[in-house]
Length: 181
Image (cartoon, rainbow, N blue to C red; front, side, top):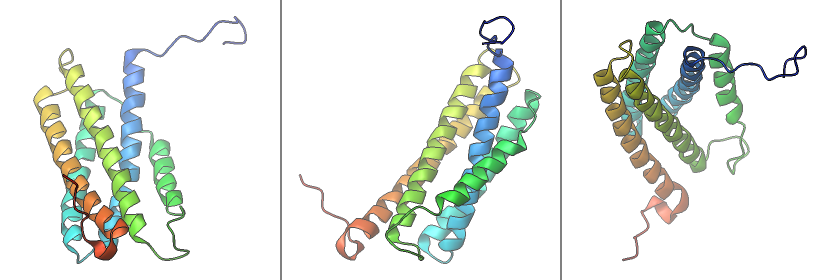
């Protein structure tokens, strides 16, 4: 409510809402990239490490694509949101993982789940922008479909890594548990 009239303030228009939406996704991507860079360092020299490096390159390219969309809509980057997300990623490292100082297998699992959720959010972004492209020529609908397909591949990669982490974390000797018929 505005103090002088007692009425609710008018809702922001679609362009403003789109700017907020794009900046929220940009900030989330900043946090995700910070987490993924740390995971790449942690898993350097492992089979998962090489896949994480490829994923990091793809996600950095996705960030560039998001910036291109923001430029097309003349949406300025709100750097404060990105900074807050990066700080939140650092604070999330303090979560209990079953060990006082060192990483535990649970750390890998939780980080992979967080990344997967982030990529699922990015998939929703590309699909939303694909819908916007139906009526707004500033967005390339074919590019949004390509980016959505890449996000789906990223989700599949993360799910494979996540399931391997589940086996390492919750099964004796890290062996997969047989699925009952």
